[in-house]
Length: 192
Image 1 (cartoon, rainbow, N blue to C red):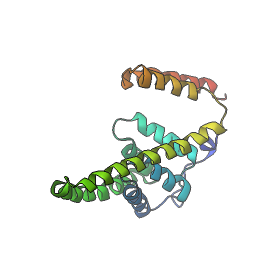
Image 2 (image 1 turned 120 degrees about the vertical axis):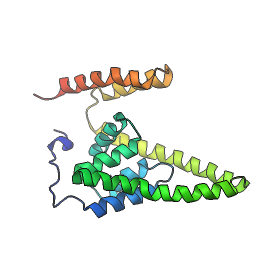
Image 3 (image 1 turned 180 degrees about the vertical axis):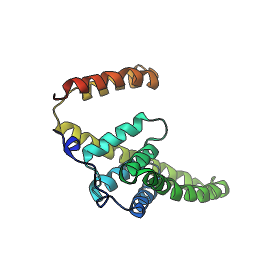
Image 4 (image 1 turned 135 degrees about the vertical axis):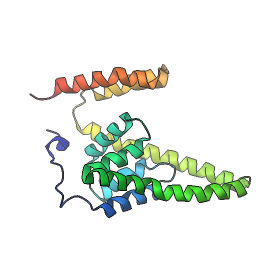
């Protein structure tokens, strides 16, 4: 039985406090300007150990399936898991509050100094660093998938990639087709 299925939800005494949740997501948002997925994985799985790698992947998968920003969805689902509605609100505030304040200040500065050539070079460098972080976290998130028997998941993923990435089919139709197929295959493989 996978670790995530055997693991019980944490008791109230094991749950991080609301301030810890806020601080973790504020830190994630400030470290991960331009892309916080890598920092979310590092903070929640590697540093704080609030989730296993498999649990993180499951929460992130759910977050991708929900409408809206993936990382915003992840913060709400994660906060809700540990502290209910208040936890969801606190993690969302931690994720969005500090960057909103910084972006407002930077927007004012960009209006004033946006034509400076050095600033354009800095922004190009930041974009390259963000792309590298995305590649690194993708590799980290793929590791737990290789620890399990191959199953159907890679085939569903490849089908989704081909449908959306190569054939350019609309994402919502591909999700509507592949989600029930994937759920049915997972149900079929479940031990009874």
